[in-house]
Image (tube, rainbow, N blue to C red; front, side):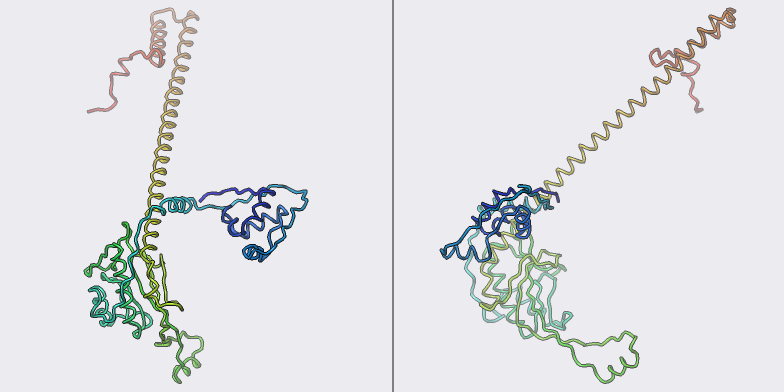
Length: 385
């Protein structure tokens, strides 16, 4: 995420606002229509009234409100947070979509009986009979190398026949079907390297049953107690099927198609292959953008590590010279002491001269420039082996 400053110029905004609808202009600036209206109010720019562009489309005569005099600022700035990843993916997607070549196969005929369906659909029908049920007490299928299905019993056959048509349509588009009954994962389609799984779901109409006399009496006798009422709700079919496309492991749907008033679900899946192809392309681009960002972050981290290492080396070097300077100062003090002792005349005898010589030798040993060898000190290891 990053911040972006969007600037509106008063005369420019006025000319643009009267040449295109506000929704298109807001999209051009990358703001919402409400933010565009706020900018216009701040700059005292009149906007076309409601119904203006409908009149223009009909060819009616319309009046343009002139730009009034204004003593305030002629520029309005708006700061907004921007999802850089989403913008980069959208930009690349628009550039790549033109080169997306996919001939949508014709929608296959709807089969009339389950016996004529694909083997995976027959396995799904067989699994429905084994008794696994969802929270609504409806037979359901989940995982085990099959697509997910959760519908009322009365709509099971229609859902299975619809799933068969969806699978055949996707296979005709060239998508690879992956189904392994020995694994817990659901069946998937591989679209440009991206896996998608399918789910047909029916929303149920929930109805609460009336409490029995015993349940009412128990609640009345113990009003403060939690009362568990089994089978309190019953679910009735809504007869509205919904096809959901998911990434494996995620419950949020990438794509949803459902029964409509104009046509049932089975007849509304004609453009499903193209939509899956577009989503797979967008997901691939998102993965590329994130991979590139990870590489840039790694490069930034390595560059920072090199700077930190260079800083430590410089500080170590500084410490080394500080220690050398400290030793040089100690050596200078010793030489000054030796010169004072010799000038005093009190150390002219042999013993005194030996002391002066010893001090000067110690100073030469301390001095990092002279760095004289001192055998008694340098050639003896404090450790005993």
